[in-house]
Length: 215
Ligand code: AP5
Image (cartoon, rainbow, N blue to C red; front, side, top):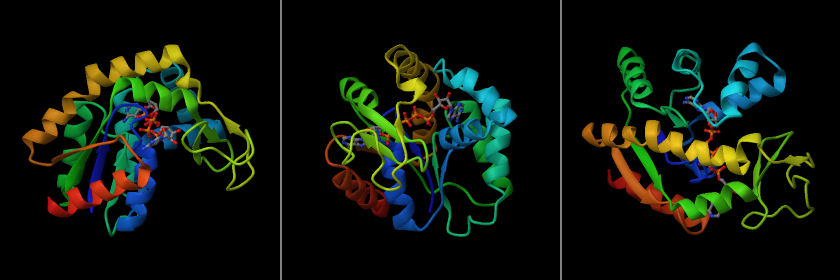
């Protein structure tokens, strides 16, 4: 399964990606996670990405495309992959198509998660992430047992800089302006599957798997 997940910030891409990647036994490749890991390690890539991420802007294509091209040469892709957060504009989608064409491994599907803006705001304002293992929690929907502490590894939970209200507003604008057009792009390619991203996490996963099986 070679799959792309698309949807606005907070739609639940990362949450669903964990379950879908496990179901299909494929690696979950999140460009946002790769940037955050580089930031944590203080690499030049992380420092460069931070200036864009903190403003809710896209990291330049020249940087992001090369990072993804490099990731897609790794030896763990025999069963496919799940891309989360890439592509994020039509130019990136065209680059991905070219990379996969060179490898003769075209995409199987693009899964769009549909959600209302008011739910996005609730999800992002309550999201907390583990500084140690990266697991994502929510103050209401996915509460850790002890406030501020990750149940999985006892790491400290923090709020992402780009989940602050003013940055969320910009991320939503950037999504509409730059990322939403890839939905039409993939519809034109006959790859698009759209499902609702509202409701219990496990139900959304089940709907996604059923929709992908039908396609
Ligand atoms: P990235 O990390 O990709 O952020 P995003 O796309 O904005 O997505 P999020 O991680 O905010 O949300 P999500 O959809 O994964 O939701 P989640 O599952 O966590 O990118 C960050 C930045 O990096 C970008 O702004 C950009 O600067 C840069 N970047 C990344 N990729 C790039 C690219 N290709 N090109 C250029 N720049 C790039 O869920 C959210 C919350 O809701 C959680 O708390 C979760 O517990 C909760 N939740 C999830 N599902 C449910 C449910 N069904 N019911 C209730 N709560 C739920």
